[in-house]
Image (cartoon, rainbow, N blue to C red):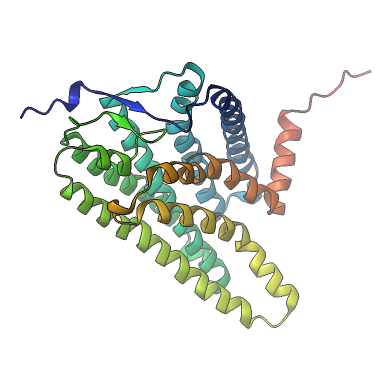
Length: 314
């Protein structure tokens, strides 16, 4: 049978069919999207304009903010369009493009968060060798590698998705095109796709999570060996923001992806996916800003230089 999936359009069920609730959600997500873009851009510009923050940790943080802007821009504009116009149709190639871009940002963010944990491990456990371990060339390679590996992974998933047939139904029970709901919808054999999803889960989920947990194991061991309470507090404060972000992001992603496809509950999963598609891009820069004195100082300096307009001179 000829694969006719290339001529199809998909219908995204979205979050709700209630007209009143859709209007309310439109304004809520518009506000969240605007805040996410604003705070991430402020964070990037503040770090770039503050010499004190030109360190490996903040270089990785800039990349994380770029991923946040990228990831929320992949899913939210289409969600806003569907909520406002009630038009929930997306083309087949538009859907595959969304899969490619979203999986790219997902893999890149997981890698960046794990390397940020390693950066904190190097800073706390090996402070004398930190400058050597996290030298400029290494940081650039880490960031470039995270983006590149994430792109290769997403290209594999998107390419395999193009080979599937979707003859039985074109209704996606989600608010954006993601791998689990599309595999549920496919009418052809998805065994290769599921095998590649499993491999990606091992590499990006388990490996990155393992690297993060191992880094924090050694970090905590080092902190507990510090005798002074003030020293323990200072050491823990350097990684507490990242620990909050990692706990929130990894838990929601692992819940969604590292499970057999047979146990997916799409009605529940699409609400959980809001955590890492819409909420975390807003929370990440806020957590790093509100819990970090250096970032707050840089933000104040940036706002003071670029927002405040001096009055007329006498």
